[in-house]
Length: 600
Image (cartoon, rainbow, N blue to C red):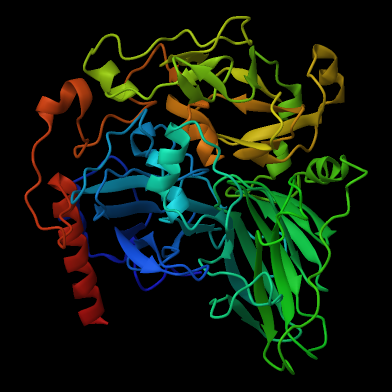
């Protein structure tokens, strides 16, 4: 699939030699023989009414949700971000691993924020990756107001996908939604208040179809997915919400699961699937029903009192081109697991890797025999209910509520700034009162580690690791013990970057620490992360010679103790200026593109 019209990409193999010589004079860290794709993203406010109430959302290029970033495996991706908000911004890319380059990760432990009315250019390679992802603004609950958009990394032509080419792509960004914006939600959290029940669920930035005149008011715009009978479509579904797990289903249609966060799965049919905050799935859906009417697409709240949360339901329409009329009647039933709490757990455990499929490389995904590797370190990270620390309501991991440093960690390392962080994060929960601290995991480069997330809270939790995907080898209710290792899946566990941890349960993952840098481990539930439920792994090659980790980019931003090194940007808020040598490179690239077009 080619990148959308809002971007420009080309292969250097089609460029005359003398242009290549010019470009080589302005090399950037990710320069290679692989193609480049360029994107401009402007983040600004826009007033919309997705649930019938006017509110200020974060739009990207005047679109809510933001535009698609569509590239191919190994493309060099250059994204120029203009921050037209009234507060600082960081754009993060969960699941895109930024190999050896945590400078591009877009989290405060590794990047200084982009000030209001400034721009900053991300540059990274989609190295050895495929699949469905999304980007979003990381800081200060901003994702609760929007700013998110989809990312697709397609296979190279020489690597076949493990199913017939679909007739089309459908992207659905689902998530719980508040009519209060992110700044109001922050005020509530700072005051020690719970965010309360969301006001609804959006599908692609739109409210529910009026399936119920009591629950859905008049005048709500809803999403319609247009399809042709007999064809098969790839539905890429992302939960971009604040904190609510959602059950996704399409009335009378099977969901054939084929991909989870960049990894091909065993192909299994589901009538519905629980999608937790931060998770992404791809389904093949065949239009094999008659067209007597449209069909409901539903995303409804899970692990809550569903009788009270009825209005927290997203509803879109699946419209066959020969449909005879709109959908009517009740929505398809949600999972009936009131008396069987293991239903969702067993469903999660049924998602397994397709070991014979090739991913981004031609070798089968199952050729990495993770179950036979010796574990070098083990970490048990405990999640507990919110607690009061120094008079403030906080969330913790192993009793530590993380405090983001004013000087990013790796920047402090390079400039020898002392006292920014501690390498004393405990590998086990400690029997002591909670504290606020900037405490990191001192992880071992090329280690193979076990991380167990123990959820002793009463709410569903989603956890994520930047810079890596991990094998989800175990999941169950109760308190984890060493005996649970006997139940681990050591053969075909799914490889992903975000997993759920059931309330009163645990999830165990394996990580191979081959990506040096500073990488965030966090709650994807925005309220919990805002209140401190995160930490970082610091992974440094002890024999570092400049080849295993990228140097700081030319356009690195400075803040905190290094603020004096930052130069002012001089341009208007409506003009995106790409700094330094990269700007010159892009100028040459655009010129070359014009020459190629004119010579065709």
